[in-house]
Length: 365
Image (tube, rainbow, N blue to C red):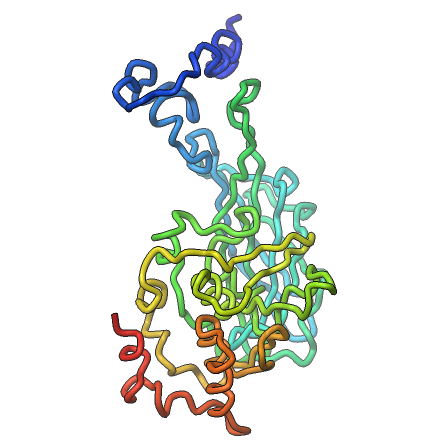
């Protein structure tokens, strides 16, 4: 059996655990008698293998995206994006071998209001590993400002094939982003409110929707000011829930302290109720997530109102939307509405950076 691999040999001889006695252990004293610190295989019965997250297996080849160029990124046209896909060794990965490969077009970056996601696995490429995808959707002829294109995807990799611990892992690439002006105006990247690195301080590796979305820049393309769960929410479940990023993230992390239910219905219909989430820290510490002082009420004048059909009031201003993600009582909404006129929100008068009830002061801990 000269061609037998280490994995198949283990499957044949031991099948990863058949010889364990399956008795309860009253302490950790006997662990080293049965489990070496590190074995030959990831996810084996060694101490390292038993505690290894499959996403970080050494047997994953890695998926790396790069966006090289955007052409025809002009209002009224169908943009084309040139990109590469490589493994960790630098070898090209063909789009046709990916289990998911989706470029996403969204805009404008001042406040995203629309996006399209397309399947690019049938695109063709050149001998140097460069691939080009022309969107089937047009940029609106009336569009102005800056738009962005991101890329997401993964390959399904089977680890420990032929054993009882055989498992399929999505080897996903990190999202990449490119910004471009659709009308000749100056390119304006999306404002930075959060950093993925701060999310990963708690989440280890941020990766929503099956590992596809793993960078905050990518998240906000879809979780925009007009986005709700209406497409997946049953009529009997009442009005749609806003999944605008600031509303959603504040509400999820408020969790058990919410005064009203916060639940999102996914595209296939499951209800995801976040009302029992326990935040592992002090939610008043805005710097836990925010960067660049972005928690302060110094939002650009061009930010949009937010649509939230399930809230006591909708639409509301950007500051009201963010604050009532945590402060969910009717009184909080009433307070915000009482300080909003046809000229906009007056929140900075009392809650501005140097005001008597500034964010820093009322969130002091």
